[in-house]
Amino acid sequence: MEKDKAARRGMGRFSLVICLLFALLIIALALNLAVGSVRLSPNEILDLLKNGRNASTESLIVFNIRIPRMCLAAILGGALAVSGFLLQSFFRNPIAGPFVLGISSGAKMIVGITMIFLAGSISLSPAVLVIAAFIGSLLITAVVLLFSQKVRNMELLLVVGIMVGYICSAVTDMAVTFASEQDIVNLKYWSMGTFSGKGWDSVVTAALICTPALIASWLLSKPMGAYALGEGYAKSMGVAVKPFRLALILLSSLLSACVTALAGPISFVGIAVPHITRTLLKSSKPALVIPAAFLAGAVFCLFCDLIARTVFSPTELNIGTVTSIFGAPVVILMMVDRRRRAGQ
Image (tube, rainbow, N blue to C red; front, side, top):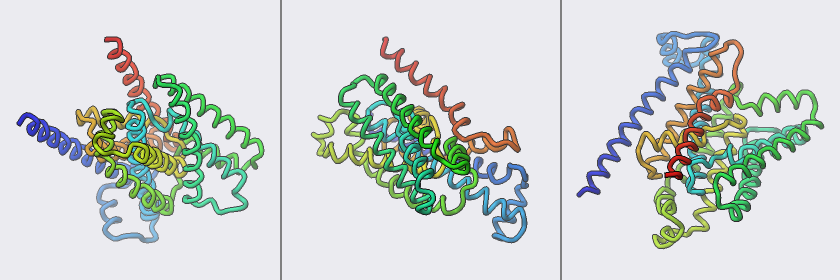
């Protein structure tokens, strides 16, 4: 009886959080449509959406710039949050994340090398960049997993991840030595993280890659819940642990690679947003956290992107700068809270 009441309370809270996130998502989308170098009133936006594309400047701004940009921010923000949650489930630690563990830096390294040395040989389409980033993500994930077999202390493993990230950045900097001036400009602009200048091809690529990966992640919710209680318990519940762990790593790497390839490295979203989501839900159940984390990541990145392009307009901040400002304090509070609890 008590269990049924707790389950109903949990679902009621989940419904409330989802409604809140949807409301924030609608507000964020409306603000991103309206606010910018050219401000649009609600009536103008409704008329444009109702009548469709035309040759006016406002129509070009809305349909060719703002809508693709905010769609990409929403998809990639949600994907990065879920990627972080998958890594946290894998390591059974809330501080794990693609940026902190150096996985984003590995993706950045391979994409940078691809942009510098292969730009003249192949077309650098969004799909090609995603493949390059995926290879880089898997490479660094393999290194982190190798160290995780030797290092059981998560804080020390985070230091290893940060050092691996520095090594990847050093390799990228060495590759830049051989780049042309134009390649250097493009690489520097991309490597700071931005949703600017992205078209519908990037949105379609992100949707085609992230949608199946997100669905697959949610379908793994039940074994994730069992795995959180220990490998022995997961095995007793019929979970094939090795294939399950491999699936978690592949899905997390694919999602973070897609983000890095299309928008550059974006920091702290993969750690801060899952933590905020769990706090709001007062639950760590993957079946609840994954959809809520996706919505929260979308909302978080939409508001951060809005701040990035408007607060110092016409100068635009890098999205990674804004996500760090809001995400880093959350991570610091998490680590302090963990240390405090460990001392009790």
